[in-house]
Image 1: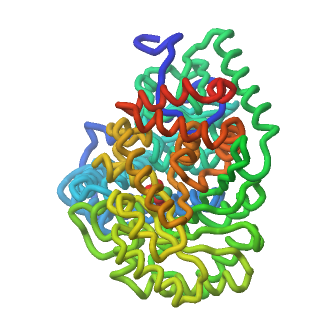
Image 2: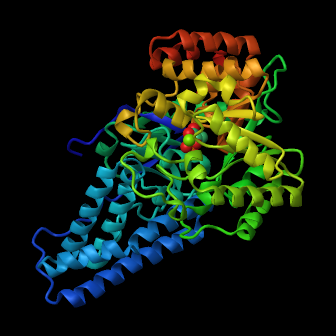
Image 3: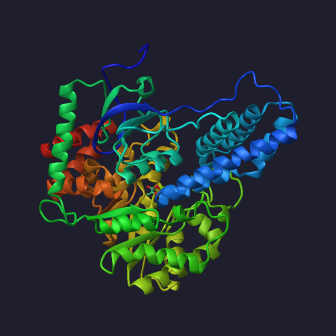
Length: 564
Ligand code: PEP
Ligand code: MG
């Protein structure tokens, strides 16, 4: 087994709760061009063949998209677009003409693009994983060898990878993937969000994961982040026992979110499209706290029409009837989620650039069409629709948005609080809207000045960072002064312990992947509002993120501490 990890406990960040046990299946690394590859005999003929390989990859990705759910579909289709990028084909042709072999030419063209993407930073840098994935698949097709990635699984297994491209995560077969462990990645990376959405236990940012040998039995706890390699039967039993106790505890958890003394905290779902809406509509949750509308259009090259949008939004609203709210976020385009039809040109630093509402202000036509479609779908279904803006920083921006929403005939407007400026001035920012919703993924990114896509910075991005909690506290106080409700729709809302802290800080609703709702509901049911306030003060008073978590874990109800 060489240097392989054997009988060892590893630790990462638990991003999707649940216990899982099975043999490790290592995701095949990227295929490389052979170092001694000969120049193409005829560069023109070779280019035709390479283009066919790119097309094969695009078609393969689209076929996988057809089998995937909404969110996954968009990601896969967007990746397929990379394989069809004419600039990439042209760059490959140049390499062929300069005397390189076909696989080498693909590799060099991809790396040329990757360097440009990395230099641009933000969204572009994040797409480098997808770009290299396309390159590696194309090289495999050129060489006639199996595509890299997750092999066919014969039994329920633990997938172990350096990192998983969103495209890979999205198409995993839930029946055969018992759990996921990645060496890289962070709490708010696409892989983490998708795994939770799919209900697959997952641990990310687990150092040493790649030293696990294929076939080694591995047990994971996607709640605590534990990864047990060749665990003893007792260890597996402990983990399974915890899993069983978790299931038993959650089996009795149903209905609206409420603390043990009757303080309501609405439990809502995060969704990315029609299929997610149907699934969340069937789940025991109180509605939708975040519909990421940009997810629906990630692969659209032209702006969706009023009719197309009305149709989609109608289908999204229907599962929630007229009594469960649906909070829709207007297009959060830009930075890590660019939309081809809403591109304002390259930016030095897209995460700090014209994204979210800033982009809507530059493209009022897009916002107004979307609001019109939302209003039409709301009136067609009688749904309780509330519309909020992403990336709001000032009171003026919030007022501008509220006016647009009301002009479109929509009843309620709100704003995401995900920029520290808006959190610190919540009293002014919320003055003319109906509610705020804390986007803790971006709020952590901007408070800690740490790119949320950078796995290496995950400690800084931890929402338990006392500075992030202090900013959330300020936002909740501002909302309370106005008597306006404040929700949370970032990933932290689905962390059962943090949910207690957020409730103690004054949050009224928590929105998350539906798979996380039962544990949060259970956590609330074990604590009174005063308990939550006490836990919030413990976390706020801690010096470090680790201290905050440890203090809350220590002080919360032991029945909960035993499960998370
Ligand atoms: C957030 O930033 O916390 C959020 C909910 O929005 P997104 O993750 O889509 O940026
Ligand atoms: Mg955000």
